[in-house]
Structure formats: C-alpha cells, structure tokens
Amino acid sequence: MKKVSHIISSTNEQLSKLVTAESKLREIKHELAQVSFLKAYYDTYKIIKFSQGILYLSTSSAALATQLRYAIPEIMRGLQDKLPNVGLVSIQCKVSTFTQPKQPSSIYKKSKAKIISQKTRAKISNLSETVSSKELSDALKRLVD
Image (cartoon, rainbow, N blue to C red; front, side, top):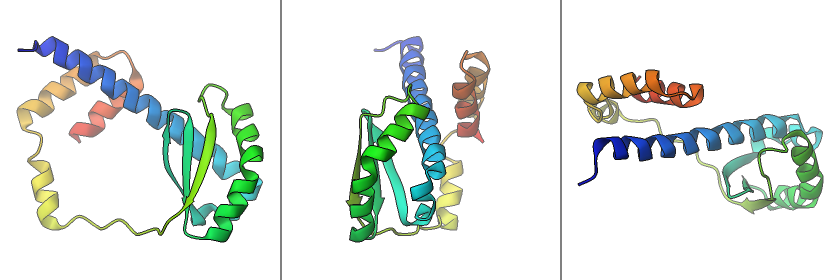
C-alpha cells in the first residue's frame, strides 16, 4: 500500500506539470493574439492543445487552415523569438467544426459540489499553503473553490 506522503508527492508533481503546461499555453495564446496576420482571424481558430512542443490549432474553414499552414514558418519564428523557453517545435493545423460548450445542468452543478468532501477540501486548502510554487498554490485553491 502506498504511503500518503508518496501519493501527495506524486500528486504535487502532476499538478506542477499541469500548472506549467497551462502557463505555457496561456503565454502562447497571448502571443498568438498579437500576431498581426492572426488578429483578423482570432475567432475563427482555436488552440486545441500544446503537447511535447507541438501546438495544435483547429479551424472550421479549409481555406483558413491552408492560410494558417502557409503562415506556420512566420508564426513559429515569432513565437520562438518571443517565447524561447516554451519549447515550441512545430505547429499543426486541422479543420474541424466548433461547437459551443454545453452549459452544465443544475443537476450537474449540484453533484459537482459533492465530488470533493469538506474534509478533502480542508486538506487541499492546507496543502495549498505549504507548497512553494505560487502557481501550484493558486491551482489548488481554485480546485476547492
């Protein structure tokens, strides 16, 4: 049986990786919004994910996907110059349809509140005060809110 400290340690590592990845994605989104070519298309493409140095973009238009693919070298240079520590290796673009996320039903909202018990919330809250990373601490606080 695993010790609680080992479980908490591995959970901290996983949360730290998630916070780091989310931070990189936020930086990339911000910089993409500044690219003059993409400003006109801001609502027509979505960032699907950023994984292993690959930025995945999606658009609902084949024509726009083609334009984005032709602009990838320019976008890559700009992002690599402005965000050298992100580790961007390539950009991939695909065509897909966008759907609006469904609003959670009131039943879901009620059940979501019961997923984390008060006791667990208190433990996570205490843990958020002991971790050294501010981003990890903030993520833990958002988890219990």
